Length: 286
Image 1 (cartoon, rainbow, N blue to C red):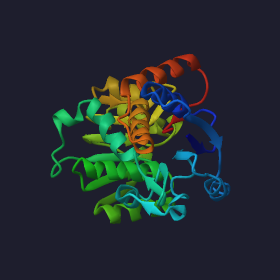
Image 2 (image 1 turned 90 degrees about the vertical axis):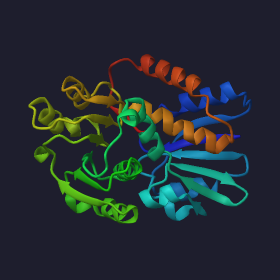
Image 3 (image 1 turned 60 degrees about the vertical axis):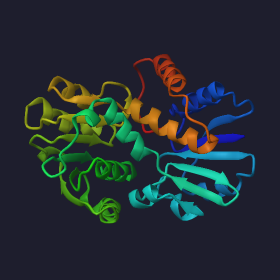
């Protein structure tokens, strides 16, 4: 069976290391997983070319929203978030899912959020960015019991999809700028590249912003300035690798029908990261 991760750019993706390790640990001989460069214009044709020998696809930028009208069935979480990062092929056609949302919740649980909990009636959350991953972060916040979230975005005019997702989720969103964030939010989720979050890192470093928990979806290079500032300020920090690992585990289970071998996937992913060294640009979410 075949599977792949699609996106543009895609050469940086760590997903092949994770999925291939899963197949090996599960004894799925003959299964393959590759990275395929694909933009929005090429997505319909690529989907059409996937025959019965294809199990599924992982999707990253810029395809998580573009795939929705091309699906035969869409999981409720993907509908609410307005983004699907997973396509599974079956007898009933193409089914879309969002494993980013449970992946974020699992990554934060690993940082201790599940143990401490959030009192939904008196806690606060801040999301950095307004793209497809930010919509998933909004859904993850709702999954943690929150109903009101502040979103810092560079271009408020491009936050229409985020506002629509908030409406489907029954949440309220307050938009602000990166340089204006302040206070003591219980949770900060950054969905932007490392450099884009530098103004927020500075706000944490100078004491204007003091989060209890931080999830940064960047996994390479790590730690990001944002993660380093938050850790120095005493926040519990979850890195993008944990998100990547857990969303990939969800995809493996959807595509294979078997429990994901998390330990084998983690070891393979960390080994692949170590082989990259400290150089190169930042990688996130795939």
